[in-house]
Amino acid sequence: MHFTDPVYRNPYWPTYPLLQITQGCTHNRCKFCSMYKGVPFRMQPMDLIEQDLMELSATVPHARTIQLLSANPLALTYDKLVPILEMINRYLPDMEYIYAATRVTDIRNKTVEQLAHLRGLGLREISLGVESADDWTLDRVNKGYHAEDIVEQCTKLERAGIDYWMTFLNGIGGKSHWREHALRSAEVFSKLNPKVVGTGGLTLFPDTDLYSEASTGEFDPLDEAGLMEELLLFVENLDFDGRFITHHTSSVDLNTDDFKRDKAKIVRTLRKEIDHGDLNTMSRIRAMKRGL
Ligand code: SF4
Image 1 (cartoon, protein in one colour):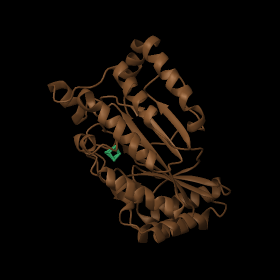
Image 2 (spheres, helix red, strand yellow):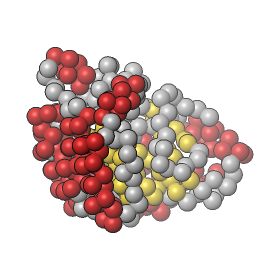
Image 3 (cartoon, rainbow, N blue to C red):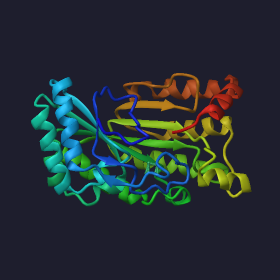
Image 4 (cartoon, helix red, strand yellow):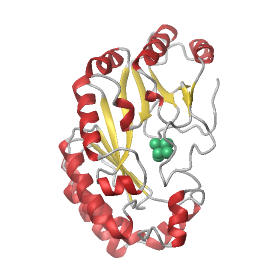
């Protein structure tokens, strides 16, 4: 198999195997992310994709799921994606679920009809690293889109029948903007119908712009209690019908398959954790992290 480091597998997707159709990230400018620094974006050559699929057809001929790599493989145009998905189905004829992470902006150049066709070829689920729906915060961390893009592109996915995840990156508004980040994100996420909302707590990695800005005081990060207050505000104002996942913010398990049913319990648990939790341990765990 032909992989370029780093290889990121969504830990919540039960997918095996992985297939690299692009390397790196087309954007590579989010201020909190260093994952693909030094890895130029490129499409994987078709002959390498085919070699990998030949290998998979010999080793896992009945694979029903696959995850496409790397950061945002759907940056490829519709015309480039179709032959790749057709090739996957040719070599792995039992294929049912093709998963991919990607950027909100990667949906822009595809029509609903084209997305529906990709879905027909197996593209069933997409994870969008949305991070925030507050325009000030999105600009602050250089995400490269605004709330109206999120609504427009996610609505297209819904019309095409493609399930999607939305992530909320807890902490990127900093002390000056945490309320707006939480409230506006909850408002926009609640207008949409994601299958999953995932939240992660911000960790400042030394090789990122946000770390440098925190060092000079230009960015004023939340402490552990502040991160949890922000998450609590987000959850209190979030209304959607699906699975909720959170990590890197609290040591308590807040995950549920049914957010509507368990929302009150999550709110109670978070409040208790803010008041009585071991926030020092959480801070030490965060300091040990080396990547997203
Ligand atoms: S967070 Fe995602 S879109 Fe932003 S630079 Fe990192 S990989 Fe690219």
